[in-house]
Image (cartoon, rainbow, N blue to C red; front, side, top):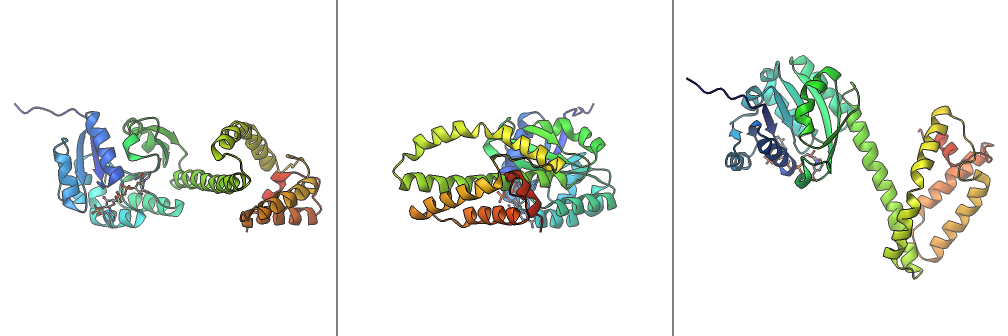
Length: 291
Ligand SMILES: NC(=O)c1ccc[n+]([C@@H]2O[C@H](COP(=O)([O-])OP(=O)(O)OC[C@H]3O[C@@H](n4cnc5c(N)ncnc54)[C@H](OP(=O)(O)O)[C@@H]3O)[C@@H](O)[C@H]2O)c1
């Protein structure tokens, strides 16, 4: 009598830092896990942890109903999909690889042409935290497909579904990450100013962190103003803010701190005021941002 293996099955393609963490998370949770990596030895080390190793990406995709791809970039995903070809028919592919919304939509189109289902995903977090709520994952693609793979995806962290457009997980990821960078470069400029002026950067940051808590409400209010295109004087009128901005720029310059981005904000204020909207608030500059 042959023993049946009733463990859930999954394939992970790409045994880099993230892919091997994903494979380990599935192995630890009792999945029958098949892995493939372009450079074979990185896959072979997973055998000790209980993974099934196969020699081609096509065999890997054929081995499980669901395949997670964690590769360097979408060019690597395209290379792997080309080599998988018709072996993808009837399978569900989930790419957890960085890339643009257009690339995610192209992957979805490739899957549809090859009789496969596709969900795109983006990971926010570090490989050692995989499988915990410290990692958040954004997904998009057909709801029915997402719901089929949802239990397996939940094993990886805290997940959120962003709708049927395969590109929307990438939009969410890029928007969140870019917002973080814009915020953090402002923080570095601010620390440069306060340290030059003789304040303790850590003690200042303690106070700043408390002030920032108030921004959540402000952001929501501004998003509402933008959605309705009704711009009240949030943060005061632009006429008043423009004068304050001149002071802030002069202060940074006097301390020898670079002011390119502050000048850009000031020039947006000036343009909006010149359009006759000096009584409106900061959110009204939204009207100037679309090229
Ligand atoms: N690491 C993180 O902290 C982190 C966090 C969030 C998101 N991510 C995203 O997760 C994805 C994987 O990142 P990672 O850190 O695991 O990268 P990594 O350690 O550099 O691994 C890259 C993987 O891609 C494979 N690869 C590259 N080009 C290929 C090709 N043309 N054909 C087949 N395989 C190819 C590599 O195979 P070889 O071994 O043969 O080179 C390797 O398995 C990336 O999209 C990254 O942006 C990473």
